Image 1 (tube, rainbow, N blue to C red):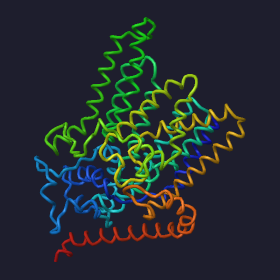
Image 2 (image 1 turned 135 degrees about the horizontal axis):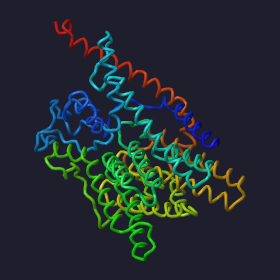
Image 3 (image 1 turned 90 degrees about the vertical axis):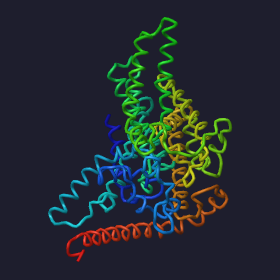
Image 4 (image 1 turned 60 degrees about the vertical axis):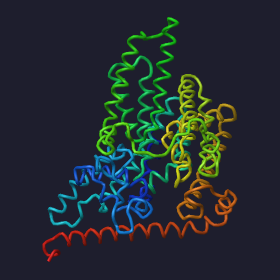
Length: 477
């Protein structure tokens, strides 16, 4: 227990030290996610007009014409602006943003000058911090899940590897208004609780699991693939019952499964209600991309230079292999998780925009963070059991460090446009940049990043003051 707390404290220290990296802005897909939170908090309705006008240029491009008017095609049959993004991130942001909003209102009442519009710096900092916190909690929960089956040292090392060796840090710190860190958190909680209550689950535990599953789907729809865990578990019990060796009767388990499904549906109501309001149908999610079930881009998703999940983040290959190496009680969990991973690869490969468009790596797999940590820790543990323990520890640490350094170099290249955000990249050029360009530009780039952050905060504060003055009686005169 003492060692576990040491590892946990180390993770907390790293998280605190990483907080200056958070980027308090809303752009790209994040405009749609954040619009749910801001519109309901500030305007108490699903009116995204201000969000569309506040958005960055690339988001506004197809939505606002040259005359500064929102194009008619943006409005749905119900008269609302089309917002196909999920409402789940807004649900998770809401406790933080409500507290911030009350604080801003109180501050203004006491004579302060901060715009209570959802876009002033307190709101953006709160949103960015909450996203980073949810990403960190996803890692901590994944660490605790893995240590149920594996030694803490390997779980800790695997957590660091996935934290800084995958796509997670970009969407945890630099694009905090997107949904991916929230999805990793929601999945981590669901998988942890499923694992904690394995066996004859009580009625109440099935309800809690269903509620967590509904939250998970509210955040990121494809996370529904994790329902394979309770499904496979239940099928195993049904099979055992047929053979007369089950610990629970089939009829009783079936009723619990029905209760679970009903709870998921109830918990998923925020999505169904918002889609009904915006599009006129609970089943119209607003997406126009196709699913090509007969021609999956399976190998492209895995290894393409156009955001292939393994080619961009080779540490995830090791994580996938490790899922098959769990021993003893963890073998079933490992095999179930490997099944989810395989189905996820196929499913994303069927999506028309499987590459994630403008994406660092393939962002569509960040929600699998918990099983990545579990699989990588399992591989490290297998190495320790197969080789001499000290040698395995050195090899695992060096490999993890290499993967992290490589990934952070790619993050720098991606953020500074040394490699394109969309489409395939040249691995030859990327490798050259890693050695010859990134070390030279990194120091100056870090300075520029923080100086840009300071200028951006000052600009937002100045804009808030101008808006407040224009709204005052003296300003109107």
